[in-house]
Length: 177
Ligand SMILES: Cc1cc2nc3c(=O)[nH]c(=O)nc-3n(C[C@H](O)[C@H](O)[C@H](O)COP(=O)(O)O)c2cc1C
Image (tube, rainbow, N blue to C red; front, side, top):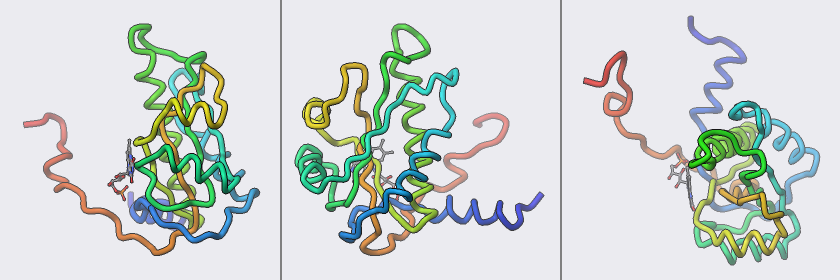
């Protein structure tokens, strides 16, 4: 069945997202930020444990400090969301409690990025940062481990979606060979 109307619009949003690394100085309105965070936490989460925490950093001085600890953060955004795994709510193998936590945080961050894109903002998942320094700067409790920084803002220019590998190389049906 071909998607129509609303479904087609969702697919258009999914297809059009690309990382945004340069932002205008325009702040992100708090009410809009609230709506983005609301859909962030609707992501799938192992055993519905919601082993995560999301900290929105808006103060320009703090954003600059975060960027100083994050070589992977290119431009200067008006806002950064620190996406964290919550060890106290971890599920899964005791030997690898991080696996499910990382997957859940990643899914939530994808929601955040897609929601931002849908409302005309842009962002980038950033894993290249000094976790210990960030944890100290924003005073995270011991159970919260920062996994991704998500700078968000109005794109300075609209990026082209990045090239992807051939679908026949990465998508197969029924069995791999
Ligand atoms: C786990 C993860 C970590 C990433 N870390 C960084 C980063 O530190 N700095 C950065 O500029 N981009 C980072 N990216 C963004 C990727 O470079 C980007 O998603 C990729 O080039 C594909 O581009 P697209 O998202 O526009 O399709 C990261 C992406 C993922 C999924």
